[in-house]
Length: 283
Image 1 (cartoon, rainbow, N blue to C red):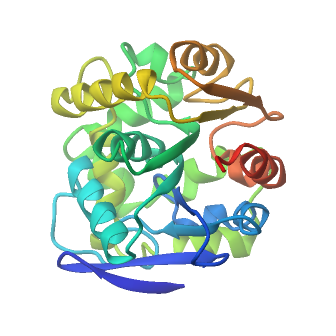
Image 2: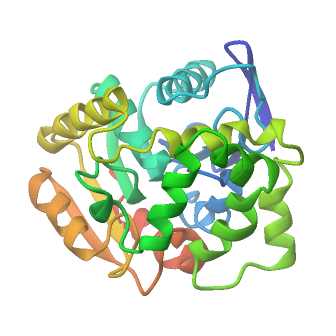
Image 3: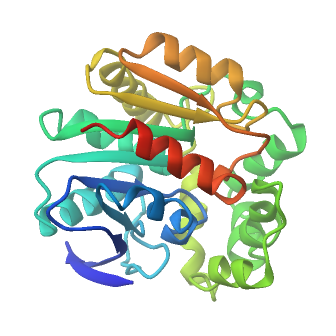
């Protein structure tokens, strides 16, 4: 891992490939970090400069005293791109990393060369649309509520200890769990984890995040750069019907079906994802 100054803090990142090649930026979600791309980047690095930053407050990146809003995360990523002197890029995103990839593509239409997405955060018009399981919906409602969210995420660390293992069909090893656990040793260090469920765009709330992501998706739908959506038939955020809907409404979009999975598809299908991105990668 390396790190680079960004605004008032630092962004850590993984790097593979040659710096004179086209830049591909891999963006993770909550509560993971760049470690989740470890099995995918090697497939792409033969033809691209692969960079996987840790979002601010996650992984080995700094944990400044900020709100960890969606626009905070975007601002630190923009600072990272500027510091790395990246003029053109392809974005790959999962979970909140997908929503951030769509946002950066809307912000920098002349620099983006393509966007690949899987299990990405999207505006859900209803709670039922957000997640198929009632238990999961209730947990997110709990995390959004004052007091119970702090208890669940900050004090008991249950986003890592209970929810993360359910994100893949393959059981995570003890070493893998420790890698995901390591960035969050104390309740205070877990504040960035709690911010994300509280701004998950569900049923129109929170309005500013919901509307921003809607606008970003509208820009993506008509943009002509290549798009790739990878999905599992029974995925959580983008199961087959959702993936097919996005592929239909987005110009120049390719759809790739993976095997069975839940949310963190990178843990169940790293080779398939890596090969699909390498084959699709805009030249």
